[in-house]
Length: 138
Length: 413
Image (tube, rainbow over all chains, first blue to last red; front, side, top):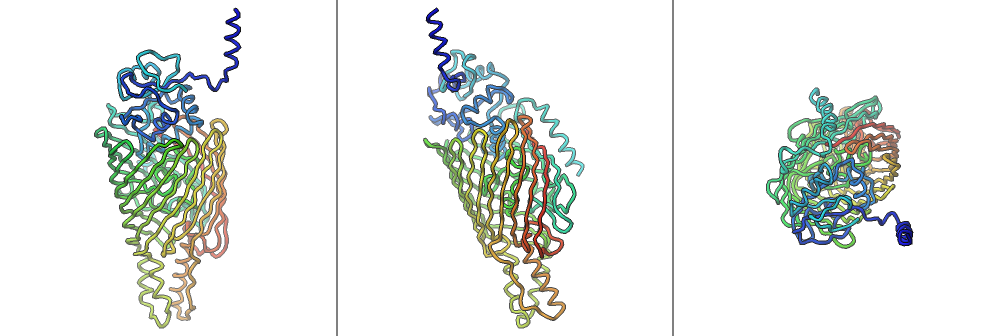
């Protein structure tokens, strides 16, 4: 009982903003084991199409209307999802970068990242399995 | 025309069938079709003073029109190999001259030489401003239309040539350098008639630095006016050519000022933007230096936007002013034919002179992940002999004000 109270107090003390429940994942064979927030921003904002080790990558996005997508981009850039959509329209229609492929849900993200060494995706931590490598927690 | 309307109707429909995908994959990962469009209505201009947001467009002399802002584009991206891709973009809008050459906005090959370097060749957007490569894609920017003072004077949307891009992420942000060269041109309409403008060579360089919330870019470009084709202009130049030097000595020097052929134009600009949480601020300033008075001007704007939920409210202040004062035709001649020629020459030279400011208020409502509704009011002050961005049916011999109302739906699919 005492432990439960301590745990509850500790949980209450953790500011909501640092609750890390979105994870960025890659294939286990990828030599990249960790990425910084800035590196993930560069990857998902189309500034580079390569992992920091020079390996070409394919990015995957959660559905356009999903809350996990809005939360992921907001944590990375502090911009609302509408601003991200407009930003990607810019890159796409100037031929600078192809937007991340949109998949239907976290299961598809896992399925793709498990099979493709060049894939990168993100999902809620609670949906994680042990067949992918977490490179960043947001 | 009917095809144009059909295309517009087809787009929003395709949007809803497109579901989540931002674009349609044609069977595999390597081919992607996407599109964009704006369907809008604009109230602008007055009986003798025509408004247009692009020099390539026909002017609007009052009442409502769907043409100034409405545009529809399709883009095909093909990944040929992991390093080589091709992009073609076609754009339908109401231009003064419609031909295949103008409709194909982009058509280029992109080669990713190394993770940091990209080489492109073909037809590409001229990278002069923050919006230069996406001024047709209303969904991609905040305002109901690009700032007239800043974007209208440069009628060039694309060039044929090559560019080289080097980018690097450093600890503080992302750096990008770009060098390009080629040739360009556009078919525009000004008060003294239709113009075929050809610029060759065109060379330029940009540098930009982007942090989480700030973006700064500086731009330089230089180009030579290779030819200005226009029947009205040729007629005027021929007439001036026949004037005896002893009667009107100034006439000999005027054709060079009017035609611009052989003159160079140098473009310098600086732009900054800030985007975080509720605030969206952007500003650009430019100087176009040239011996040709038609293009020598300085311009700039400041735009401040504030997001409230899915709606962004914004205001813009902008100015554009020619570097040269309008040339005065002297001395006044008594011969009626020559006097008439002097009046036409004087009016032509005044008609290219720019001196205007605009204050705008507007809102953008992101009502769908691929669709935004925008409304904007512009109040423009145009000073005497400063209507170079308008189409003038009579000389502008006094100050005027204009109101422009725009309402448009912007989408991408």
